[in-house]
Amino acid sequence: MASTYLTRTPSAGNRKTFTISCWVKRSGLGSPQKAIFTAGDDSSSPLNFFGFNTNDQIAYWEYSNDTTGISDFLTTRRFRDTNAWYHIVLAVDTTQATASNRIKLYVNGVQETDVVTGGNNLYPQTQNQDLAFNDADGHYVGRYGYSSDSYFDGLMSHFHFIDGTAYDASTFGSTDATTGEWKINTSPSITMGTNGFTILKDGNTITDQSSNSNDFTLGGGTLTNLQDNPSNSFATFNNLIPQTGATFANGNTFVYRSSAGNYRRIGCTLGATSGKYYAEFQLGTNQWGGICLTNGGDIERTTLGNNGYMGEYAADKSVGIRHDGIVYSSGANVSSAQWNQGSLGATDKLCLALDLDNKKLFLGKNGTWSSSSNPASNTGGISLLGDSYTFCGATDNADCKINTGNGYFGTDAISSEGSNASGIGKFEYDVPTGFTALSTKGLNE
Image 1: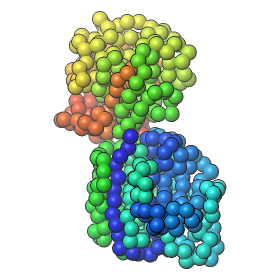
Image 2: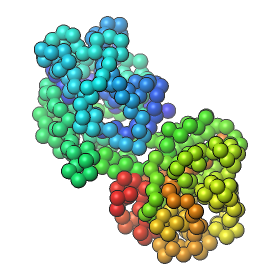
Image 3: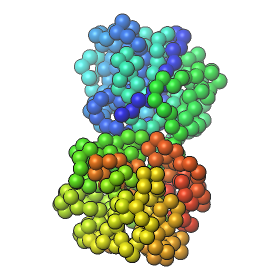
Image 4: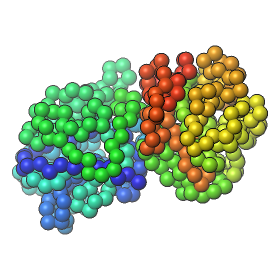
């Protein structure tokens, strides 16, 4: 469960006009609400919430206290993509004469005009209404301040708060002329105002990177500096695949499933049909690491039986290796030919090199490739029968951790960074020549 949040109590500023701009990559979905930025400490003070509600809609609401609603603004769209970075801009200006101009919300450069009320007024009904943001009260990034819950579950980057100006999304980003993708403006031209701040711009710093020195403090949890960023999204476990009893954590790089005997598999959010990709796993007892097809139901064991190992069935066309060194590939036990390094202990790293140009998978342990194989020279390896693959873990009453380039196994950072000619991602061991991370940049190399 997410528990990290930042806090700061400002002096009173402009409570009528402000802008929030941030990039977020979601991990947890649904209940409870996921707060991006909130203001207000107790039921007697004004309260603001900005984030995702339990239905995965973007929500902004304002209460003069815990019962009197001023604004209750919701998108009709639901935002459930756990691979994408969303750029969200909220521009508020209650000095506007027209109520519908007092709140404007943009996602990836496009204004959200299909909006609904969550139960109270959609927009502030009183011109020049003072709101909770910029009041001299507790402000929280990543948590609801009043009831100490609603933690944001995911990643954040380039968080700007502007005191006194309502900017639109074009200040903070632009459309790539070639790809049509919304891309980040890392150094926007903005007037910050007295309480304005910029945090999480470069790594995980919560020191204000504007000229204002409006620094935040870490209120709880651990703030981790990952390689994942708005310009390069890394593959993680896909929590949209139905998994009874599965618990995801650490930006969906960690999965735990309490039910034994099912070996339910969880593929990643990115897959490929060509290219060469590298990843590392840490496996708990009875856990599997490997690759699986990205099409149809083969990612989750439904049609082929709940208790099937990864790769146990010919129709599966997947490859899996268990912590004790058992290897299955497309219906065959290939342990004796493909694995000569014994079991994988709790601190060992399983290395996978997925070569989709030559349709092969290479297995290694702690940086050494198994059974005289060599992915750099296409020597040995396991032949693949499918076309489109992703990295995959299978959980059975223990945890499975994956590093696709973020440099962490759950909460544990890599101890020493291996070489990586592509420059994309951080891994414990040397990335084989010609291979890269399974990420949006890696896919486009």
